[in-house]
Amino acid sequence: MKVILFNSPIYNRKVGDIEDYLPPFGLGYIATILQEENIDVKIIDCVNDNLTVEEIISIIGVEEPNFVGINIFSVNFDLIKEIIEKCPYKTNFLVGGKSTKFLYQDIINFKTNNSISVIIGEGEYIICDIVKNQVSERTKLQSNNRFVYEVDKDSIYLPQDISKLPLNRTLFGNRSITNVYGKIEEAIITSRECLYNCAFCGGARSLNSNVPVRERDEESITEELTQISCLHPETKSIRVLDDLFLKNRNSILKAIKIFGKFNFEWRAMAHIKSLQGSEDLFVSLKDSGCRELEIGIESGNDEIRKMVHKVGSVEEVYDVITRLLDAGINVKGYFMYGLPDETEKECQDTYNLALKIYEYSQNSCGLFRTSAFQFRPYHGTELYNKINKHISFKHNDALDELDGRKQFNFTAGNFSKCSDDAINNFVIKTNKLGENNEFKNRKVPEL
Ligand code: B12
Ligand code: SF4
Image 1 (spheres, rainbow, N blue to C red):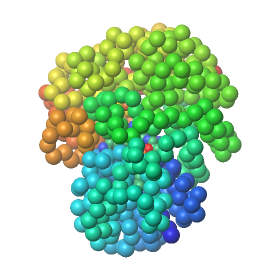
Image 2: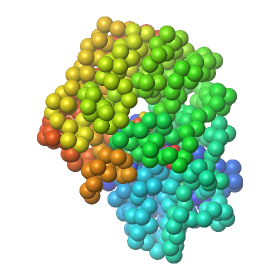
Image 3: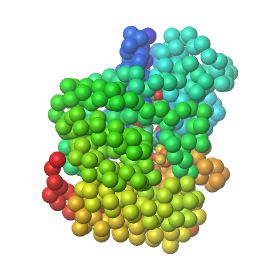
C-alpha cells in the first residue's frame, strides 16, 4: 500500500523567486500515523517544490500510489480540480483540509473515473482506516465511488487528546527557515480549533462548533521542543503557529514555564483580549525568550471591528500593544483592507492605527512590524455568505513589489466601497511601515 500526500499548489504557474514556506503540518500529522501503521507514505510539498499541475500528475504516473491525498483551500480549488480531472492514472483521491466542510458537494462532482473520498475534519486517524478499507463509521454521503466522511466530536476518529499525537518532523526534510531576526527557526502547533469567531475566518468557532477546542499539555510541548533540539540543533527560535498558546493568564504562565527550560527565542500568535489583564507578566514573558507576538489587529475602526467580531476596541488594541512594546516584546500586527462595504475613511482609520503604533515603537524597547492583506472571502465564512455570489480567486500581481509575500497576494475581487487602487495602496503602504522602521538594521537586544 502506497500513499502520497501532496501539499497542494497555490499557483497555476512556476514562480521565479522562491519565498520561505512553512511545512504542511496537517499532512505531517497524517503521514506520521500512516507510518506508524507501516504504510508506505511520503509528503510532496508542491508549494515549496514549485510544482506545476503537469509535474504533479507525472509524479503520480511515476510513483503509482494507491492513494493520493491532497489538501484544498478556497484559493486553489480550481487547481485541485484540474489535477484530479486531468490525472490519467488509476488511483484513489483523498481530499482534506479546513474548507472541505463547505466544498464537498463540488469536490465529489469532479469528473474522474478515480474514486474520491472527501474528509471533513481532522484526518490522521480516519485516513488509516480508509486506506485499509476498514472504516467503522458511516459516510456522511456516498454515491458510486464518491465518499464523504466527517470527523466531528462524535466520531471515534477525532483525536481527543492532542498531547498524544506524534509528529515525525523528518517527513518534512530539512526545512529550517531563517526568520526576520536572522535566527534559524522551527514551527510548532500546540492547540486545535479556535475560541474566537472572526467573520472572515474558516477557523471561527461558530463554523466549527461540532469539534472541541483542544490544547497540548506542558509535557507534550516540552517533549517536542526537546526533539527539535536533538533533530535540528542549529534551531535558535521557535514559532508557535496556533491561536491559543497564550489564550489567558494561565497559559501565559505555562508558556513562561515551558520556554524557561530552553534557550530558544520564541514567537507566537496572540490576541488582545487574551493578553489584557496580564500586563504584569509581560517582562517575565520577555525573559522566557519571547521575542515577538503576532497579533491579528485587522481594523482600526470600531464599527468594522464589531462587524467582523474582532474582540477588543481600537483603544484596547493600542493599550495592550504599547504595553508589550514597553516590555521589550516586538509585535507583528496583521491588518486587513477591503472588507465588505468598507469605506476609504474606515481603511484610513486602520492605516492611522498602524501608523500610531509604529510611531510609538520608534521610542520603545520593542519593535513593531506589519503584515497587511486584502480581504478574501473564504467558503463558508460569515462574510462569504453575506457576499453570496460565485467567488473565484486569482493572484493579485499589483502587490508584487512587496518582498516575500507573493504566496499571500490572492484576490477574489473587491467588495468594499473603495477603488482597487485605493485597497492596493493601503495594503502596500501598511506593509512598508514595518520595512521603513530600519527593522532589519536596528540593533535588537539579544536575549
Ligand atoms: C497556521 C496556518 C497556516 C500556516 C501554516 C499552514 C501549514 N503549512 O500547516 C501558513 C501561514 C503557511 C498558512 C498558509 C495558508 N493558509 Co492557513 N491557516 C493556518 C491556521 C491558522 C492553522 C492551521 C493548522 O496548522 N492547523 C493544525 C493542523 C494540524 O490542522 P490542519 O492543517 O487543518 O490539518 C488537519 C485537517 O484539516 C485535515 N487535513 C488537512 N489536509 C488534509 C489532507 C487530507 C488528504 C486529509 C485526509 C485531511 C487533511 O487533517 C489534518 C490533521 O488533523 C488555519 C486556521 C485554523 N484555525 O485552522 C489557517 C487556514 C487553514 N489557512 C487558510 C488559508 C486560506 C491559507 C492559504 C491558502 C493562504 C493564502 N496563501 O492565500 C495558505 C495555503 C498554503 C498551503 N498550501 O500550505 C484558511 C483556509 C480557508 C479556506 N477556505 O481555504 C484557514 C482556515 C484560515 C482562514 N483565514 O480562514 N496557513
Ligand atoms: S482569525 Fe484567528 S482568532 Fe479569528 S477565528 Fe480565525 S483562527 Fe480564530
